[in-house]
Amino acid sequence: MQPKEMLHYVDHTLLKPTATWESIKHLCDEAIEFQTASVCIPACYIKRVHDTYGEKINICTVVGFPLGYSVTEAKLVETRQALADGANEVDMVVNITDVKNGDFKAVEEEIAALKKEVGDKILKVIIETCYLTEEEKIALCKAVTNAGADFIKTSTGFGTGGATLEDILLFKKNIGPNVKMKAAGGVRSIEDLEAFIEAGCARVGTSSAVKLVKEVLDK
Image 1: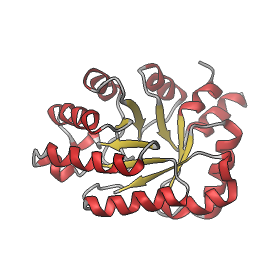
Image 2: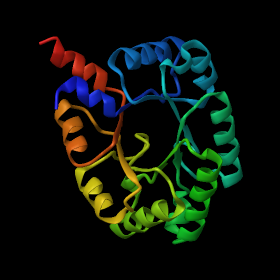
Image 3: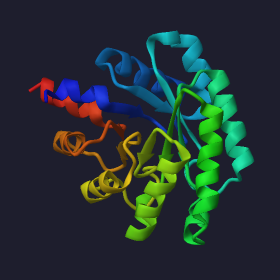
Image 4: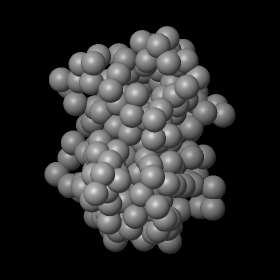
């Protein structure tokens, strides 16, 4: 796969708490130029991006981010406002305290509630693999599948570790046929990007992919 083609799989991401409007505009301009799958941005910028770029850009945002332990009602309010402001995709963080307490029923119910709110738009579920045992990861694959989410996603990028190919292969064995995979966090080279796509990821969340591809094209 050619480097530029890989960018069609990328959620071009900027979620730093210091993100300025100028840096968000730069992200969006790059996303349009290189035809990335979306921009993944803080919720506070959704309306401004939508008002500025309209349908030229696919907007993704995050909910319950990055720790996941806000209550379901708060996540629903965040989701509702994000959609009203112009987001088409929502990446939610599961309640990892529920996971650690073994309450996968609560996790599944929360995911299902957000998917109902999202409707025909896309819901990605961040499970934050760096904090989980293999058994917990497998249980979450089942919860994400049963709840009807569109994607399972490895990481926030704010935890102690990011995506690994080992986790993607584990997902592949344990998710249902209607669930896609997103790798995020720690994608730092063209080789990383290609490896995750070849392993079956429909999306890769990274802030560096456009820069990496530009470097290849400039050689």
